[in-house]
Length: 124
Image (cartoon, one colour):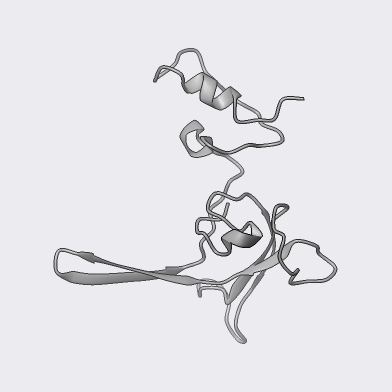
């Protein structure tokens, strides 16, 4: 799942779900170093493809976030991707998914949460 608005006009928006194709590191590096970029396939992406043999592929590069806590400036650099093979109902709110397996449990912790879960997939 993409965690940043990278190219809104071409469909690369926060919460977009895609598939990681490969992880590329700089020469002579590997884990635990940060990758140079991660090639992902995003079905809704409409821009130029990164790898011709993989339509809708796009390289996601590290981005630096900065903020202030008290009077101390802080920053971190990371790849704006999250695992999305398992989502909470709250994280899926607002998404439209082609398929979903939903475990709604025995009771509702919050009124309406089952409706949110069930309305996030396409009805056919």
